[in-house]
Image (cartoon, rainbow, N blue to C red):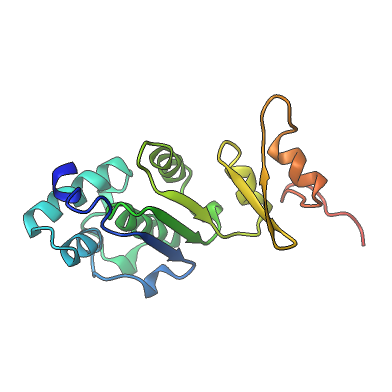
Length: 179
């Protein structure tokens, strides 16, 4: 895998997955979708198939490979599209949807991949407090009055959850202040 893809350190500088994944699909089946970007970047068909199978197994979507994309539930569509971008080894991967839409196991795998060396920078464009909570151990930044403010959480700093509360962002399980 490394040899084929390392011809250009990253096949894709950046990628983005939006709330309506069906508008971004390039294939008809999950397998075709996972192979499409690799084929566009000159990876041989047999090698693309092999890489797609390996990626599907590592992201936990191998049982979907033969499914048509339109038959998938929303969270599976998102997982397939995110996986297809990850196969292209982007430097940056933007997600313009709520992380809560992803299956918890897939989300764990996504975070695991993004913590590896030479992994893509993961940018989540969300205003949902729930997403900040899901990213408790990640570097979380909030756009605040035109500035990017990091929400740090370590033993000397309050938890991300407390920082969100202090910023006036309630968690979905908390009642909103009257007003």
